[in-house]
Length: 120
Image 1 (cartoon, rainbow, N blue to C red):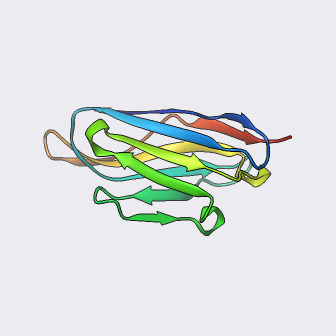
Image 2 (tube, rainbow, N blue to C red; image 1 turned 90 degrees about the vertical axis):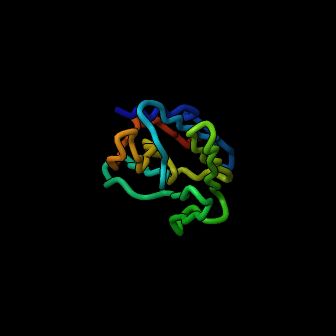
């Protein structure tokens, strides 16, 4: 079993910054794609950014140039640096990972979510 634990959410003013972290632990052989999704109030969950084990990234158009995803493979941790935050970035942010377990079975996991509120 694998657990994803997010941290770093909170309340921030428009134009401010936050850094989210997500640490994976458990029966991990390797982690392929790690990513961040978000679910704004009353809306569906959407992809924010993804990063592959080799470092290749992709971003939602709405966050390009403002958010940066990175990962520390040694720590099984993914980060999301969010700058120039806007009220429309308000959402619950979820970590996601494609994990190869110690038994070499592949599964997809979600974190519990962390709330980000952008408001003055």
